[in-house]
Image (cartoon, rainbow, N blue to C red; front, side):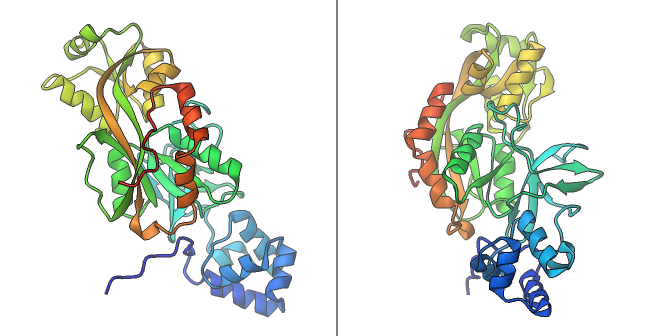
Length: 350
């Protein structure tokens, strides 16, 4: 028998809904009365008690205050819990985006965003003394999408404007995005690679077009005829990427047996271009990031970019708004302003 797919809003700690119900009954409150005092809908209280919804941190605190109990006793608490990390282990004080996939808390770097300077605009908590310090207003029930495309930050902004369901993007290269899907640290992933060269999905997924763009080398004053030769000879140093990054793999294919002189590593496309500008080096990145920092760009490969939604989470209520957003003129117009994107097949099922 095939196991049932998990609900999109499976609660974090097991039994939280029953603990809320018992505490409410002990306090002599109806669901409607608790909802009114906590400032939420009766339907939200009913869904919480039934185990079909996990409230935001703010709402959980309000419910606990009305019932006169500690929030940790009802929901187990989130701050201080060890999340499943997506990408590199966070450094002390690192700003993190945080979400929940089923009952599992996940955290990772903010999207590699040219607009908000590397995620300064939006983050959900930080890493303190080896543990997660979560802000009180975080919605943990959003769709967690892992990928390295800077456009995820734009998608999140557009979804926020329309209200309702939204996404929590975590920045990671394609190899890590695939791994996150495989072991349940993500609802969805954005992956890229040359036509016919995308990795195999690790689980059953629904595949959708997202974009097409070029990966290559970005540097000041580069020319097609010389950049690869200079890199291969070590005359032009490189800001490289994670070995699992599809753009890094494109450079390795282009260089053959030669090995570049790596002066730094970029956490994403935008970060690599930013560091290349500061270090007068060549960034392994995408065309759009080169344009943002006014760097020359030499394309190595055109890559297909796809959105993969894990089959277990296909019914998540944020999936349809996400697809509508990446198919919208509003999304296309914003990417046109940066340049380097082809979104003709965005949201088309593959």
